[in-house]
Image (cartoon, rainbow, N blue to C red):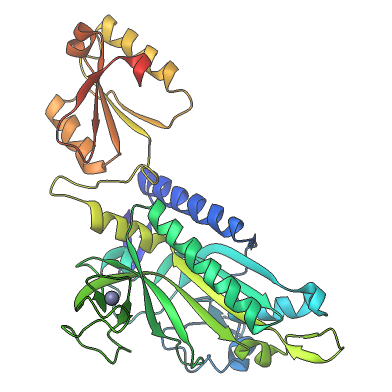
Length: 376
Ligand SMILES: [Zn+2]
């Protein structure tokens, strides 16, 4: 990553590969949920934000004056775009349900951007919006989304706790946050020592040390956590604002019931980095490692080494391989490999040629092992 200003980053070659892998995983799970991908505009009309009342209440809204006299919001969220869009496509109950998602850059005018990728002014996000004819249908989808989210975090190697939180300014309902335990987190949660119960301390009526209200066996412990995702039952708030309605089977007009579901793609990278890194550098899980293998070539001018390298690369033609064939000391190459954190490292050298094998070491293991190339 390269920091441009506080909370604003450019992605460099390795970081961009991680981001793209995060996006591919999230996209796969949103499609499994039935979501259809779209890409909405980053510039949003002020009038829509006035209609929802959020032009003056959304505390970190970027307001962008145009030199031609108009004003825009630079999108931190897309209810103000997706609801007017949905209105044009929904007429009857037969048009429901459906869900739309996008993976896009979002903007928040944070007074104090800190914690690197955890709280940025410009950041990547997947947001999905679901539209339903009935409350029951929304609730069933919401539950499926919750389970799908847990599968996503599992794929990143993260243990996310589903935490009850407040529904925000417009919803009296409970929403859910997906909290990953980490000292780098800005949230505090109370989590049961024995079952899955967890609540954000902001809304909890309990305190640490209390008996768990769910299982009665465990004690509540207070932990720091990163909010890596959230899901909201937003009801008919925006459907009322933009008159998004449908005719039910009796021909009666009803407001569309909706949910919204977010995951910060760049924040996932920050969370994975915080949770898995060690004193030598980053430790990427295989699922988001910028490359599958980091091949360290030593004694590169040796014919035997070149032959073994060719054999290895032929074998690995379907994998993403980063080759370090720089004219550098072995120690420098190994420390760079640890720093970058690609999940598997392979060494090709005169020594490995002599053994008729290559050395394979996982980033999260201390020692490597010698393996024949055709066994890899
Ligand atoms: Zn419990």
